[in-house]
Length: 358
Image 1 (tube, rainbow, N blue to C red):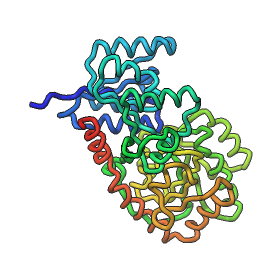
Image 2: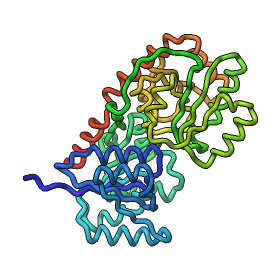
Image 3: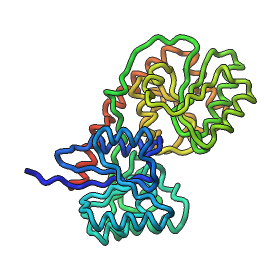
Image 4: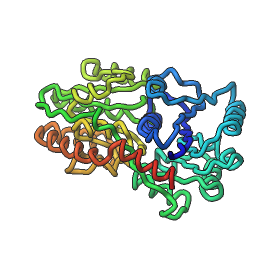
């Protein structure tokens, strides 16, 4: 009988966001005959939707939170000293809390997943620590798309063969493709945290121009965040209360995606957004800004339109092209689904397992 490997996947919180979604999906889909999987968090967020989902799947959540940053280090040190961990898989800033303990306690496999472009590391000190982790502490960098891998090579001067590339995956069984007629109002949808980098104000301003041009559309914004109040004020200022709906955080995202016609991504920067993959799995065409790794899953004339800049007029033009050509909405939707059939969460999990066991 094969002895199971103990895997600890680290993420700062279990709040509803992209990297957190990745960790939860991966933890659930790893082969439990090969791995004992636990998820470690730096802030107490067990009672979120993602936390409950992990518990429903019998995955233990290890809470390293404390009164301050120092107490988190102490909690992590104590846990790694007293528990045998074979594989440490870090995400976001958790590598900074664990990297030296990984060496001290001789964890055999150490991994870090880049969820966004490498140039977003926001200080010279952090960049040096990341570089040290890759060059001296045997952490394996994993990029979530080819574009993200390119940024890692550029920022850290690493050889390409030292960087793994594993695309994020989507559960296409949960997000099924339902063919439907395109009827007005045509529904636009965006799923994501309401904060500056997601740039939802571009969507709202674009809807204003499209409404003024006479198009019968509605925008649904799924998610919540620090810009909720500001974005609500913008909607009120533009008198778009009948055309923009703030749905909030919901557990039945797929129902809203199945009810929508076009997925809109307006982000300034992205990694490989799972929200977009889920929309594609539901057969939605994608209108998106040229934001990071999204260019590896959205292709002009195949499953969507990539807007080259962040101008409202350019974004409006892209949406308008679909509104004028409803047959293209269906055609691009089929293209979206075909792409996601290769980017499943099962394929993603198997790829990580091969790194864990290499």
